[in-house]
Amino acid sequence: MKFLITGGAGFIGSAVVRELIDSTSHEVVNLDKLTYAGNLDSLESVSDHPRYVFEHADICDAEALARIFSVHQPDIVMPLAAESHVDRSIDGPEAFIETNVMGTCRLLEASRRYWKQLALVNPAKAETFRFHHISTDEVFGDLAEDDPGFTEQTPYAPSSPYSASKAGSDHLVRAWQRTFGLPTVMTNCSNNYGPYHFPEKLIPLTILNALAGKPLPVYGNGHQVRDWLYVEDHARALIKVACEAPLGESYNIGGHNEQRNIDVVRLICETLEALVPKKPEGLAHYRDLITFVTDRPGHDLRYAIDADKIARDLGWRPQETFESGLRKTVQWYLDNPEWWQRIRDGRYQGERLGAEI
Image (tube, rainbow, N blue to C red; front, side, top):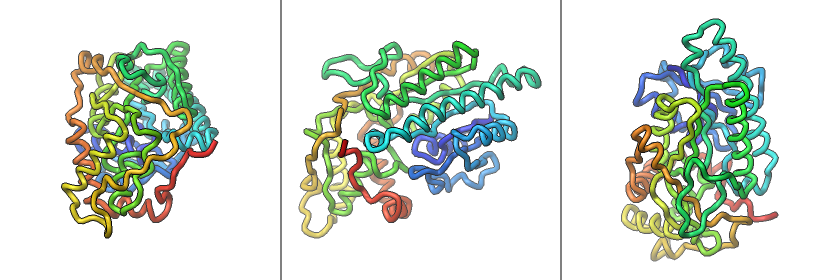
C-alpha cells in the first residue's frame, strides 16, 4: 500500500516514515511544509530509498493537495502535519487554528474528492482507502490524581489553544465520516518522546541544557503528570491501526508510563550521571541545575491514557518502559550532536515560550 503522510519531516511523522521504510514493504509519500520543526535530516537514512518520495507542500494549499493525490494515488492518508507545542499556542494561537483546523478541513476535502473519484475509476482501491486521523490525549482536558485514565468515551474538555485546535480537527473528521461516509479511523496519543525530538519539549530540552550546564526549567512545582510514550512504539501502533482497525473506530495509544515532570527531569539527570560523568566546569551534579519557574498559564495537572482497547482489539502494547526508552533517548542525543546542534545554532536556542499572556 501507499501511505500519504503529512508532516513526515516532523517528530512523530519521521518516526512513522522510518518505520514504514525500514520494517514494511509499503510506499511512502511525505508531504511537509518544512516549518520550524520539520527537519529532513531526520529522514536521511531513508531519503534515497526507492519506496520514499518527498513533496514540499502545505496542507492548507488545496491546489497542491489535489495534484499530490492525483499523482501519487495513496491508499492511506495519515495527517501528522500539526502545530503541536502548547507554549507556542499561547504565544500565537492563530497559527494553530490555521494548520490544525483549516489544514485538516482542506485535507479532508482533498481526500473526499479523491476517494469519490476513485470509486468511479477503481472501486476496489476505493474500498480499501482510509483516512487515519492522529490526535492527542490533551483534547480530553486533565484528570484529578485518582481519576481513571482517558478512554475513547471520555468527553472532550480542551484547556489550551493547542488542545482546542486538535479537538476541532477531531470533530471535523467525525463529521466527514458521518456526513459524507469518508472511511476514517482515529487515534489519540499520550506524550511522545524519543530520538529526533525538536528541543523545545521537556525531555530534549532538559538533556541538552544539562550537557551545556544551563538551568533545567521545571514549571510550577513539577507535579504535573504525563503518560510517556516512546515515539517508535507510537509509530508501530499508528501503522497497525491504519492497516488493521475497523473503519469508524477510535483508539487511545499510551505508554503505561505515568510520571511527574520533576521525576522525569531527575531521571534524566541520573541517566546523564551514568553516561556522561564528566560535567561542565564547576558543576557537581546535574540535578543542581534544576530550576523551578513560573507555571504555564492554564497548565493541566494530569493526563493518563487507558490503552486497553487497542491491546484487546489489535494486540498492540508498547515495547519500551519509560526507563528503557529514556536511556535510549539520552544516548541518541549523545550520539547525534550534529542533528541537534544545527537546530540550536539557528531555529531555537532553548528560550522559554508561552510565558507571557
